[in-house]
Length: 171
Image 1 (tube, rainbow, N blue to C red):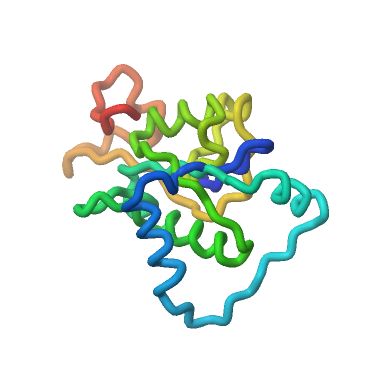
Image 2 (cartoon, helix red, strand yellow):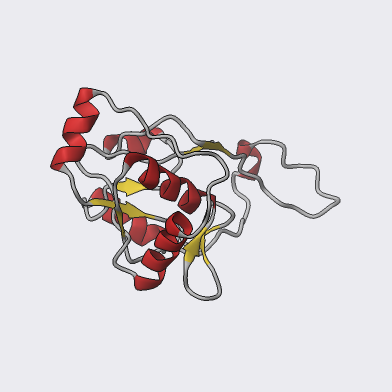
């Protein structure tokens, strides 16, 4: 399964309205030295034109998806996806506004209703392509099922048909 930055044209990102998140992003982009010299990202004319029209790009993060994105003990969103977006922000010279909710069901609904332009991590599934455009994956991750040590009956997704399973609430 692929987790991707979702570029939903004509909508893009929403999350800087939470002060703690905004502080975390500005701290990570302003106070953390980058060991490699910053390189800008070259955009084609169509991409440049789009960015000129969309000064406020709204991004949403799943707050319960470690290590990719999660809310830490201080209430600040962090993780690999947050760091990647921070780097992207610096290299493009743009600011992202962060969507204030991190519960997956609210993040998904915000993207569908165009309250968020980009979702930092989302699995590319056929039914989601109705609503969203997906970039190439920036992270690959396998989904797993955890069973008792002595259970060897589940080897593929179809093996859980008719069985009770536990999932994270609101997923």
